[in-house]
Amino acid sequence: MKNIVIASDHAGYFLKEYVKRKLLKKKIILKDIGTKSSEKVDYPDYAHKLSKIVKKSDNIVGILICGSGQGMIMTANKHKKVRAALCYNEKSTKLSRLHNDANIITLGSRLVSKKNAIKYVSIFLKTKFEGGRHKKRIRKI
Image 1 (cartoon, one colour):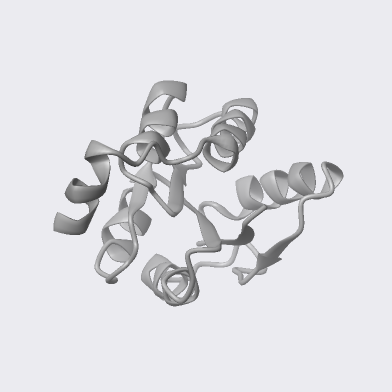
Image 2 (cartoon, one colour; image 1 turned 180 degrees about the horizontal axis):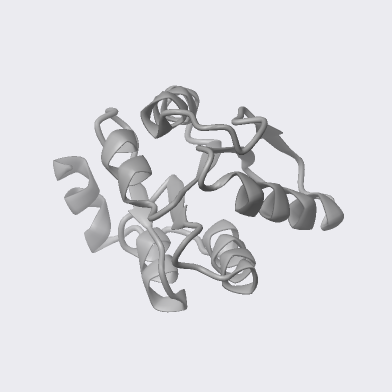
């Protein structure tokens, strides 16, 4: 099992807490790096902080949550060795791992239900990178 780091901005705070509780119930250990409330914060601060942790090791994956997921993905993908994917359905989630070896999932709390958020995170954590023809493409990113 990979190490998991989770973060959100104020808009994603309640969904982050929900996802965190569900993962902890499954005995999945994770590190929450904030935010610690629904008070307004700037999403880039948390996306940068999490991305700096994820890019240190192939054994770390991240979960980022904001209102749409867009701000987090844009910021995270500025970092070398980070491949963040905005996941909005089961297929996009699975393919982000199979073909793109994504190491961060981003979710939009205003666009994804709690039930689906857990489903997408579970798919993301369980799906392995296919490798093969996709390896050379990943190197080009």
